[in-house]
Structures are given as C-alpha cells and as structure tokens.
Length: 248
Image 1: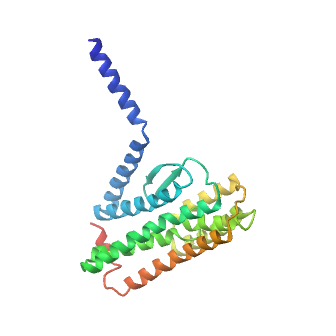
Image 2: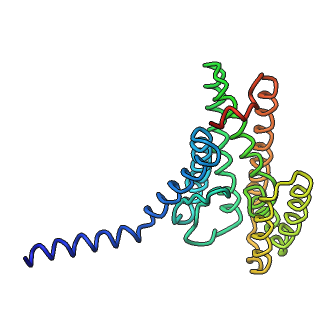
C-alpha cells in the first residue's frame, strides 16, 4: 500500500512540474493559436501563419543566443509571436542583429516557397510566398517595437543619448498615419506598447563601431529591398496575390 502511494505521489509531482513547464506553455500557445486561426481563417492559412511566425521568431532566437539567453518562443493569437529574452541586450549591435535575424529567416522561407512555387507551377505556394514576404516587410517598418523599429532604435542609440525617445516619437507618428490611412487598427496595440516604453524611460546609450553601424543599416535596407523585389516579381505572375486561395 505504501509503495502504491509513493508511486501516486511521484506521478502527482511529475504532473505538477509538467504543468509549470515553459515548454507546456509554449505548446499551449501554439495549440490555442492554431485553433483560433483555423476557426477564423481556415486550416491552410493557420498552418502558413503559424509556420511563418515560428520561423521568424526562431531567427531572432538563433542570433540572440550568441549574446543572451532566450526564455522561449510564444505565439500570441491575432498579434503574432515573441521570443522572450531572459536578460537585456549587452549593446546596440546585439540588439540590431537580433532584430534582423527574424526577417532574414523570413527571407529564406520566402525564397524557398518562391522557388518551389515556380518549379511546380503551384499557385498556392506562390500566394504563400506573397503573404510571407508582405508579413516580413510589414515587420520591417521603422515602428517600435517591430523589427524595423528595433533596428532604428539601435542605430539612433549609437548616435544620440535620446535614441529611444526619438525612435518612439517617430514610431508613434508613423504608426498613427498608417493606422488612420490604411485602417490597420492592430497598430493601435503597437502604439500602446510604444507609449509604455516611453513611460518606462530609455536605457543608457550603447555605441556601435562604424563598421557595425554600416552593417546594421545596410542589412536593414537590403532586406527591405529584397522583399520588395520579390513582391514586384510576383506581381507579374497571374494569381500570385489571390489570397482567397489560402482560406478554406
């Protein structure tokens, strides 16, 4: 009898530990996102969206781990995903490179889908290419806390002690214009996050070398240019922007 209770206690402890597991929370975020996206948009779009977000955040993690520890990747339904760091970035160079890591993996994913779509003359793959490219290009807008805004912050921080404030003011103005003109009200949440960052105050400036500054700026502009070029190429392919094919 005592042995049976010891086994039961061990099982209960294991379950309790499992429920507190970071990986369980991550898995639940994926499962909840998958269910909500599938119900709202259909399974095909849900799979594409979650894959694109996951690999994008994985890109951030792979680069960030060179300097800091990452707590994990979490999906937030109808918002996106986030790779949560366990500590602050040691300098602006690490911040900029980590911000560019996500769109870089997104670019690789875009190229793979594009090549496969052309090779097999598959409209679904070409439409998926267009959507992934647009998603990553949108994320490169210089609006904090999106990737483009984080790169802008890292660049400004190396040139001015008011880098965060300047970045946030610019982000708020640009996001407000885009939100009103294109009716992208999701940017309202981004504006709220920017406002919170402004209230929390800025961190001490961390300067890049001239080479690091140039690489960061060139990498940022190159990614934007490549995504635009791919989208321009896709615009000459019939059906490549027929996004309705993604919805069941």
